[in-house]
Amino acid sequence: LWLIVIGGSIFNQLQALLSNPESILNTVANAMIGSSVFFLNMILTQSVGKCAHDLSRIPKYSQSLFLRLWRSERTPTKRQSEASKTPDTYQWGYEIPKITFIFMVVILYCPIVPIMEIFGLVYFAARYITYKHQFLHVNAQSFE
Image 1: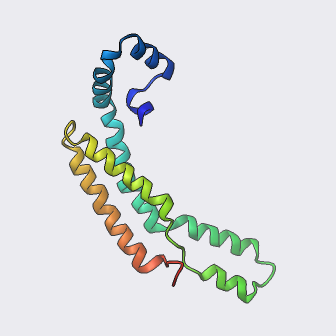
Image 2 (image 1 turned 90 degrees about the horizontal axis):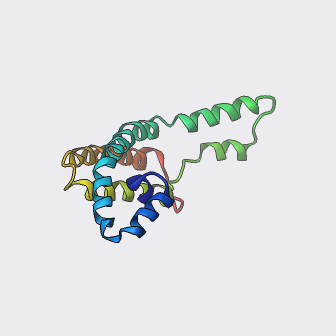
Image 3 (image 1 turned 30 degrees about the horizontal axis):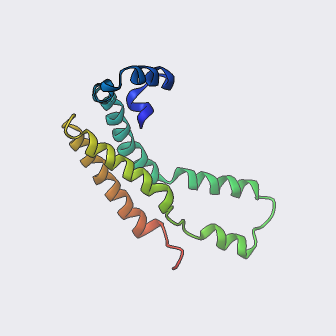
């Protein structure tokens, strides 16, 4: 987050901050305003692209199609066919940090860029719909 907000080379920024320590807050405040467009675009892309990607399940279908075409010369065993039908499990450790990061960015930028609230609302509404569908119809927990 620091590299995105401040931007540029670390050494140049550290040299400027070490020479004038009082300017740390001004540098961060000015840089946050400039990087808000990046985070708006990131949230909008995540809310539209990632949700559509998760609902379409194109990687899972293309993987199964490729494996089916690759193994076409022999008949799959019963164990292989059952393994291909098992539903995916939700990767909690992979998804929750991304959601937490988006929440942190929205909370951080709400006072500076008020339209961030709207984009945050769109993101979390889209993720709610996606996760509701995925948990009800697609994913299965490992204890089931």
